[in-house]
Length: 148
Length: 130
Image (tube, rainbow over all chains, first blue to last red):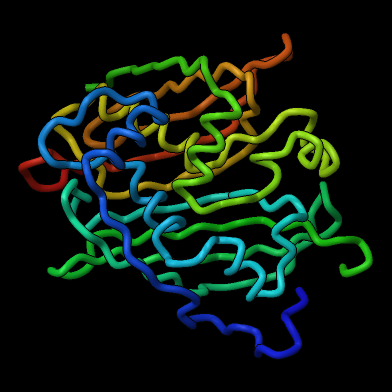
């Protein structure tokens, strides 16, 4: 972990980014094509939008979050696990606010890499009536041997 | 009642990966540059973004249980889907819970599981099923 010199490293619970994401017909059709899904029934968007909004709706590229946490995004970062809790389905024709919060960042031993940083981010997806979904991702970032 | 479900995904290619990366605002080079993927030890092909792999499983649920909607999901990414791979999503739905996995074959190698997920479902216009 190597946060930039001019910024204090983020702490657990800190909001790292926030943005908005509108799900329209074209966006839903695109996700459905890529996810090999059929046409939409009703107004419920493809469930894969939970991850699309979490990563794509925070107003900045996901790379920026990693760099802010002092992580080398180009070192081969991979998604290790995720969870989603839907309070309500995400629907087409809605505009959502998305907030990314740091849950934890820990360095762990890795059989493959020697050491790896585990970054856990929590994403809240809200509409005008409140929370719609919460997404939690764990990303594993290999640590260069010199930095381990 | 347990219902087995299955779907095969054949056209996992670099163009689709680029589109996922646009949507996710993710320019991780392992998804976009085969040379960088190889230099990082992932092999000579680009890596499908994890959310794309999970989306295949969610499509499988949508196809198999059109009257249900997810209320929670837990997923573990155990390996990678590479461009050119054939992926098979399988699972079963039992009492409002879907247990699924995504397996891949590539270059004649043995099939391997790359993603496991458990999803709780409820009727679209009803309450949770436990």
